Image 1: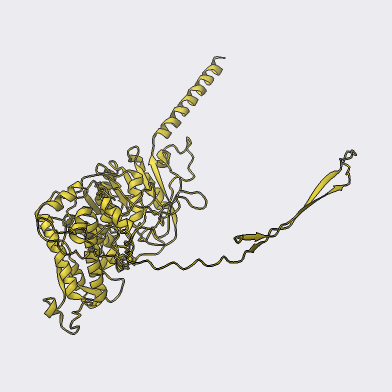
Image 2: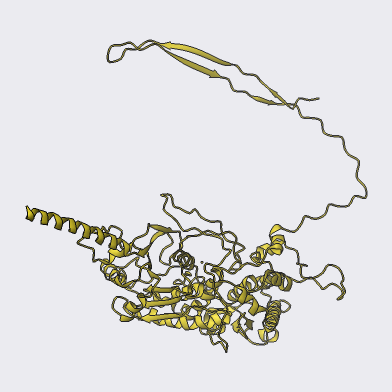
Length: 586
């Protein structure tokens, strides 16, 4: 036998020395102090000689190979998972980049959940891990969170019938035809004109939507500039959204071999063809069907290879199934079963409305007077989603955006929460785009088979227009993006708070009452009824005008503070009157 380890020994020497006695300032002598010194010799391990190699084993005959490993856990868990109720989280829209995804927007964290919804982009397979809930200085901080439930539980099914008229992806591209080039070809004959394999000079499709008899026409071209709207990507993300959130997991798997949230192209490079939708052995109904090719994998591969005929074929496969589900009433059942919308669902739908109504004129929004109250900027959608949750917006709430720009927050609030949403904007061009976006959003919601709260946008100076005061009397949540407002405008704005009902919440990027102290001299100030909340922080990439993190506040109208102050002042006045009366009596 060989020893597995050999080690050297070490000795430890401890010596003790004595310091001489010292005297204190009072003259008394201190006792001698013993000081121990320890010397330690470290232990060094010496490797032992290697053990002899084992004897060779005789070869095993007629032994079957080990069975393959079980399917990956995400796919197995997805089969066992019960259908989730859909969720609700402003898009980065002022810049033209990523317009097809509607630009991602910011919001503040209040609640963290686990699990996530299907990706909204072709390359995403899941959400990032949650960020820290607080900053380095301990300030509450918005973090990324995974979604599993809607921010607001409500019935989301559309109640209106009739033909839907909206701005199509086709018209969006054809209005800027020179900005787009061909993408797909026939791989068997790359020089063959599109008219021979697509039926027209430009490959065109009609894409089926979840809404009743709803479809949209797209031209399959690609933009020269990546900042432009991308119709092919829009088609892909629309299909993915339907498979992830408008079908049950069982339907999505059986009909399209699709597992929600695991549909990125990279995840399919090694994924086997799904056989979950077909029996593995013959049954009474006949022989087993052929395995279903995952739809998203096939579309991604066709797009990557520029394989036009295959892409068109897969789109027709998708359209055929969706039409059947609608005719059988299954799609309507699925939408009625939703108890709210997930963040990525309402974000995608709102992004489409933005792309079509605002996107073509986005460059005009950058023309403003610097360092003025009319500087344009937006809160991005994830920020808005957290604001919706933090303030408790719902179908019975009234939301008012003072300085609403092109109406993004109005559209998102109405769709995500079902609330009545108002927007007031002073700039004429932004206000006209807001009205256009509301019209497009109303039509597009029906395209998806969804409903929303009432949406209204008004071109008005919110400090002067009489309608503002009437709406604010019913407001539950007020949003004020006052990041660059002058102090005089903030002061005028605060006067609107005097008529607000109790418990109204005011979301602002700059505090209104950060250093306000209530006294007899300022009790009539609107800030006397505002309870300013603590400073909150939003993370990077939450607003359109900067990438850095920042702060915001959620105040609350509370007249109880002023009432208690008046009661204390009344008691003090009564005591003073009593003392004065007593002094006169003397």
